[in-house]
Amino acid sequence: MEKIIFHIDVNSAYLSWSALKYLAEGRTTDLRDVPSIIGGDMERRHGVVLAKSIPAKKYGIITGEPIVNAMRKCPNLIIERPDHTLYHQKSRELMHYLSDVCPEIEQLSVDECFMDFTPIKNQFSSPEDAAHFIRNQIRERFGFTVNIGISDKKVLAKMASDFQKPDMVHTLYSWEIEKKMWPLPVSSLYMCGNSSTQTLKKLEIQSIGDLAKTDKEILISHLKSHGLLLWEYANGIDDSAVISAPAQAKGIGNSTTLPKDVSDREEACLSLLSLSDSVSVRLRKSGQLAGMISVEIKYSSFQTVSHQMMLPSPTNTSQLIYQAACRLFDELWNGSPIRLLGVRSSKLTDEAEPIQLSLFDLPQAGTISPAADTTQKHSPASPSREKLAALDKSLDRIRQKYGDLAVMRGSFLTDSKDD
Image (cartoon, rainbow, N blue to C red):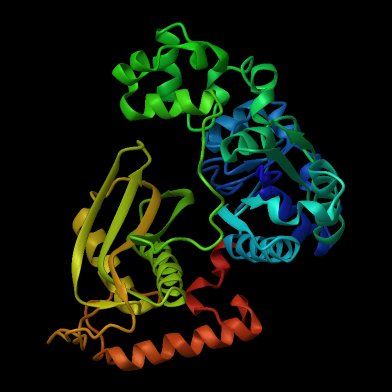
């Protein structure tokens, strides 16, 4: 049976979701209709562009560039700070709807996923009709738009969804790549970043078609295994399947690009707390314990450093993972402004397996509080591992029943000085 794969991608997700929130609150200006971006804040003009409107794109504003650059291109640019709690809520609503349409869903990020349409293709007159139906339903139900790419290969479906935007359906089957994909610049190929693009241009490879026709051994000699991957993608070679139930993970992690460069330890630790909560929730959902924690820092200079440590005993408890993350951060940070933070767990074991307890399983006085005051040097003795685990499970049950916003840490509430 020939596979049919959809790639579904929300158009300017962060900006669209923030725009809908503001309209619901009574604003009369739709961020999607004016030059606007998500990232940093208006007063400090600090941070990077996380999402942009189509009118902002016409000024040459690109995702990832510093906000000060974007302001030079468009002095009247509207800047809104990101609301990641909102974005994850909108993402869950979208993925829940798509799973009802077809359970074969592989989520790639907060705003995109693959769908193996093959099992339900007989329910529709054609894949294109099905994609238009899904696209229209999303617009009517949720108020935002998506692009849907259709192909027999995952990589080609993703490429197709990046064709003309917004609110469009495109096909890119294997037999269409010569006409639809090969004329495109090589920089538009999935997984071909700026460094690879520059290397290929030095080899006089300008288009995806040029890349597809190049001797793959030449590409391997200049770009190693990544050169072979790019050659395969340029030729539409991709046998990977849509994985709706992920294989046992070797590690579970999360990272975030900060809305502005951070030079304050307390602010950085607040981000580490949010990331640690996210990682611990995913560990508990998968029934796993982490034996190792690592922290990644990307500075404003784009230099990336990381550090890791073994835990005294495997855990999936938020506070213990946070304590480890803060300790690693303190050992790693050189004081430079931070653009990205990440927390990752590894050395995973099944939650049902017996573990050997450590003498250090009961945190002593002086451990890091899981709330806001991460600079505090002395604190009362922390709760036992069992009490912390019981608390996490209780919070998980409340959030599962009433939603993720039912219980929030006080330290995550917007401080009045930022209003």
